[in-house]
Image (cartoon, rainbow, N blue to C red; front, side):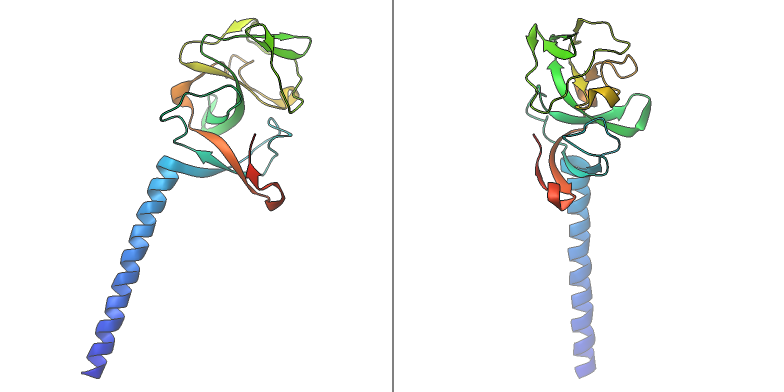
Length: 181
């Protein structure tokens, strides 16, 4: 009788742990696929804001109730390789006119106030001035000299529905831990 009680207790604990693990797995699956996930910065196109190898949090629900805004850092599938995602900064939204003059970005005739020193040319295959398509955004890397972004026809304007999330937080390395501007 004592052995049976111990077996029942062990079995009950195993079932409880298995149930807790199943719930944790479901919660992880839902959060990772529909709410937020991590990503690794690949390349130098967002230097100095983001550096190669940093691990960031991508907020996948950011645009469920809000529209993308100028200044947001977003992820979207690389048009040339949809398995890979690009990280870029939105500089203009639907209907805005983008131009490059003397290495500076102008949106609707106003120079873009950039705190991260991202001067770079409008060299690419898109002709400027350029009006952003309806339902799309115009993105640039912060490191304009080494970024393939909306200045190039291969990337072009990014349809809002193609944006997979907003990069909001830097996890690793720990010395860079914190919110992203």
